[in-house]
Image 1 (tube, rainbow, N blue to C red):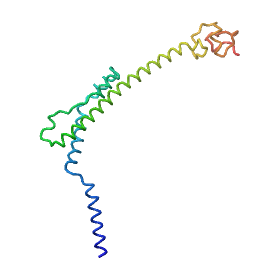
Image 2 (image 1 turned 90 degrees about the vertical axis):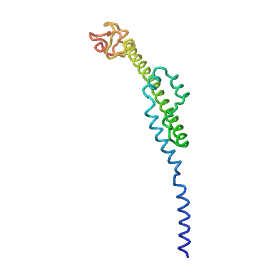
Image 3 (image 1 turned 180 degrees about the horizontal axis):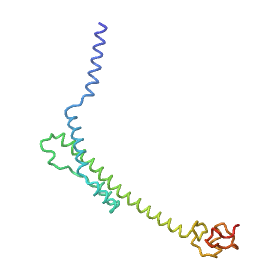
Image 4 (image 1 turned 45 degrees about the horizontal axis):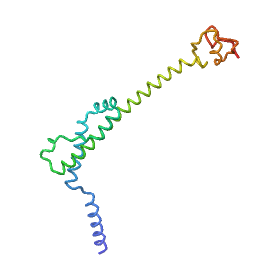
Amino acid sequence: MKSFIGLRILLVFLMFFASTCILTAQEWEALGAKSDAEADANADVNKCCWFGSGFVFHFIAVGVAIATTPSPDPSRFIGKSPEYVRAYANAYKSKAKNIRLTSAFAGCASLVALVGCVMISIAASDASENACDLGCSPYPTCTLGDEESCGGCGTSESGGCGSDGCNSGGGK
């Protein structure tokens, strides 16, 4: 009798957990629709176009990517159930919008990075041109005999610049 009660408890336990783990046909169809929609969105959205738009039009392209919602091709729904169509359309719109936004933002960020690199390069070239004025350039472009510009290179003002600039003048 004890084994019979234990078997009943085990069966009830298995039935309860098995019913929560089994997917219905509608859930399987929705999962299939979602994977189909994401694959189609990856194929349909032109990532290069959205990247270029973000690069050229900056935050306008990002705003358009946020504000607009793409729609899937209705011919994909022929012969499909309403549950499949609903699941497919929701997943397609979400994935395509995400791809558009990510690509446009990447283009915008690339432009910002490019402008930043150009500005750093310009600042670095200006700094190297002005380094002799500060007396810190390892390759001075100062005029020979110009004691003021050689003062920071380790020479005394009375020693002046040597034949090859600040590096060979009189020492401190």
